Length: 188
Image (cartoon, rainbow, N blue to C red; front, top):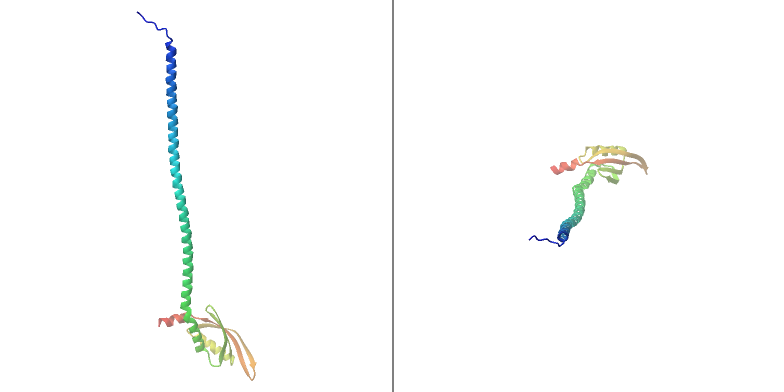
């Protein structure tokens, strides 16, 4: 005998399908939310790691900039010390030159010529003095010209003045202290 089902089976099937679809849709939404959350978490971890690396690099850069500043300060200090050492070395080298200058002036000074003052600027020397006559001043200039340590004599002025019964020539002579004389004697 044939059996006839009078129950509303289509509606029950439809409700079952809707329920299965709701469960599947809910599962899909939950899975999608889980995937999105996992992706957000993974990216946030990557961002945090990168920020930590950036912070470390920034800290290292700050430390290196401090080191560079210190190195620059040390370089400037080194340059100042080297400049001082060079000046001291030049002063040590030029130390005997003043002795040679005075010695050579005394040797080249002719009889009847007396020095009253001297001023040196670099290698240029200005000599002031009194001579018995202007010919003695020219003798002084010839002897300076023949000297190894002194050279380029130039008369700035010669004034003849009456001093009691005698006449005197007051003079100013400019000359140059030669460095070659110093090098020549050191070589010998």
